[in-house]
Length: 501
Image (cartoon, rainbow, N blue to C red; front, side, top):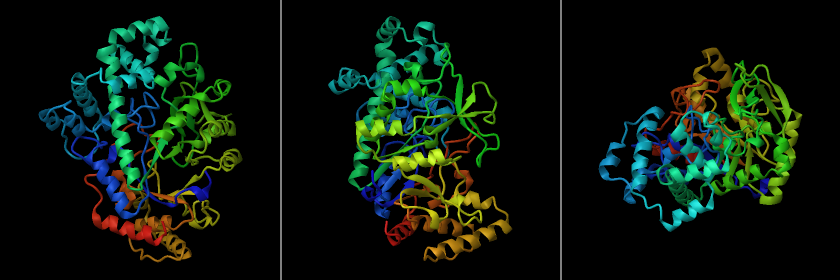
């Protein structure tokens, strides 16, 4: 899509899990609709979220049991009560104190409640039958049913199921059709209905949803289990090489993600059907699709399976423009954002240029004293999306609190020079003032789109950080105690209006 066709505007980054509410995690219920109303009132035109998919071990939205699934934790329980699938006592029992997400407790309690809701659901409902017959989540439902019976990862399933032998799968599906298979389909059916209703509401308010798709799938996923030939696996269906990134700003030993890598030759032989279908489904769910770790589509970092860190890896060639040509040929123009952060080279820069996709600019990275820094507002082009920071960064306030007083004095001096160069003025005395100035500066860049994390709008410190790369635990738990207050949103509205967004 050409830049001129895009809607210039501002947005807020806040994942569904981070919304406030009474049930232990943000949901697709009332608080999500209230958040949309806040966005509309302050003049924001976009709401960016993280991947909606069902999380697996580690609770990361970037590691899922199925890349096209919806997270059952986000199902609105109040809606289930309205449907007569849970009662008032059960709804009351699902309430939890405000605060961070406790995924362990949720796993124990939420699925038990969802199974009670399913027990009251009519699986012969014609719309549900049509949903089953579409086959959209067949592999997912089989995979989760097998995990419910056998536990562990799919590589530990009995061989007939591990290698997906047709007769064994047919007999298994029949044996668990009502108890398990339809339960997992029920979760996706309800999620899909609730998400469609929320997205329709947001679009009706003039809000576009920016959705995120991880580049890779999880090692223990229905994606890998159902199409192992599309991945770099050994005969035991275990990865021979895994994904990561080399040492960089985020980690001195790199990031060892552990995701299996694609067999791009096999993907190419099928004209990239798997990826085209994935992007097609994402474009149905979202108005704008952000592809995480875009650089891996030019060259990807391959680490030998079993390595302890990502220091010893090699760069290998990805599909490049072939993939985007296949997508455009069969889907037309899809509004896509390229997450092009990290180690960049001429190849990935050329791919982004040839694809015409906007990249990401992080204002937090701009102030190193280098006047050629790509993230300085004066160097940011229109075909880009500017952020103060992302879900992988410190919050802006946390970033500033890590500075010594001397470092902060130098930072303020540089920030004052930057906003003056943008024709702006804001008094900058302390670190909270600096966060407001960063948001103001971001909104006044040339980028067609500016997205501010909700933590930076509220000027929250690192206790509100969403994710720390290369740290295995304690991530993805941030939640708002309440909706952003009117005063803060009114100030944001003034900045958005004054920036012409």
